Image (cartoon, rainbow over the protein chains, first blue to last red):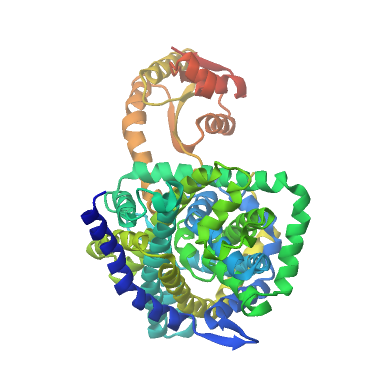
Amino acid sequence: MNGVANVVVLGIDETVQKYFGPVSDWVVDKVFYAVNVNGAEVPLIVVWLVIAAIFFTFWLGFPQFNLKHSINLVRGRYSKPEDSGEVSHFQALATAVSGTVGLGNIAGVAVAISLGGPGATFWMIVAGFFGMAAKMAECTLGVMYRRTHADGSVSGGPMYYLRDGVRQVTGSAPLGKVLAAFFAVCCIGGALGGGNMFQANQATAQIVAVTGGDDSFFADLNWLVGLVFAIAVGAVIIGGIKSIAKVTEKLVPLMAAIYLAACLIVILGSLDEVPGAMGDIISGAFSAEGIAGGFVGVLIVGFQRAAFSNEAGIGSASIAHSAVKTEEPATEGFVALLEPLIDTIIICTMTALTIVITGAWDDPDAAELDGVDLTSRAFESVIPWFPNVLAVAVVLFAFSTMISWSYYGMKATGYLFGDSATAELVFKAIFCLFTVIGASMSLAPVIGFSDAAIFMMSIANVTGLYILAKTVRNEVKGHRSRVKTGEFARVK
Amino acid sequence: MSEILVGVDRSDHSRRAVEFAVAHALERTGSVAIVHVIPWSPFSFNTPTENEHRHAQKEAEIAAATEQVIDPLAGLVREAGVPLEVVVTHGDPVDTIIKIAEERHSDHIVLGRTGDSRVRQAIFGSTPGHLVQEAPVPVTVVP
């Protein structure tokens, strides 16, 4: 590369940093307004989500303990023959999971552990457990209030239950409309932030890392990697090139399986260290020596990363789940609660164990490593060639998450602009532009903005969930009684 | 009255399978059911956009299959004056044909052969191959 090109290229990265950085800082400051509890900064928005998750756990009667019903639904045990050819429970869940499982599980866990020590894992699992109920509530409502268009296609998600459900319950149309519009605007922001920039950023960082780090050909060409991503995303969402999407959708489950297998190799390879690691996770959860903010600090780090990873209470997955074919909205609620289980309790825990067992988090320079790099190093210490596979996995996870979130953002845009095709197209173009921006920036402003935009969605969504709490409980109760009486019976 | 169930796809073999079934139905004054299964699994991975349009897509697939696969073959049966029923549905071809044959109490299943290479058959098997092994009633594979 010649010197001139180098300067120009650096210029792009730095310009983006210079102008976007302050905007990001301002948004983060407002969304993560924190109160000081015993020396720990506690962002109110995280408390907001956790309380909602705990509330719905009790309100819906601990649906987390009825996993058998959820699994039978996913296995199609209740699916009628005439439902063949429609969107199955499994397909709705798989689509939603491929939007959720991604960098949060790989990078987010590493961030949590490097900030909060192994104990943060414990609180991630706890948050994942309660999050299952919040996810159930929002996905049940998503199906209840979805819209079926003339061509048989469906649109659902918080925009619709906030607008129509809140009006039904409170009798106030403006309140529902304001909540729905606020949600939609934040959803667009979340799609561009966490669903796009953060993904592009971390995927690019991985490509640079495995091709030689600072010596990599791509080291100063982050924007170019971002551009390639943007072109691939654009080909799918604007060009409608199904083959790329199809290949990704098939590869992502495979990569997830390879990822989990690698975690198992590390874990089973040092089986004798598992009890110690578990001990670190549990003791670290309650006694946080040397961690900023002490006990509360660890707890908040864990909760925050869990919420970012499984998106319970955020409302995003409700958009994907509402495409399912079912006559009983609560069935999709029962299916959706598996999402935080898979995402946070299973996959995040595996990542955490890998990082803790290998001791990668305790390396003197661990704090300087960006998210994925820490996870990558943990694997490398046991399986030296695995960082390359991990980089491929990260790129694929990032890509599938970007496809899913572009859809969420597009539906939110469609909601705001009366399903205008032009508005949706403009959104898609902006989405691709933000892919390049995300890839060009250093992690800090990106992760800050990502979190902020995603968490803001929960302000409207959770407010709506409380307003509709009775509605959703009646639906779930009704479903449970129909299962009990045999009115809603297994067909196989 | 005995019923012969014919599983069909777009191939010429299917046409010969229907002709074979019609000839036998005439001999035994039986009826014919033509079944076309659009391959589909509830356990596939889709994009959110595909899911959104799945219902419309399903209808379109059934309409296309009815027009392009079923109608020409149904004409053959009707011309011969044999009583006919048609089924177009989504699912796993082998499991679905067996299920329909059981529900309808069909006496005989007729299929066209698929003409797959030995390698392909060794790896994936074939619809007639599986049906011959699993069907509850006699299966005839027509070349």
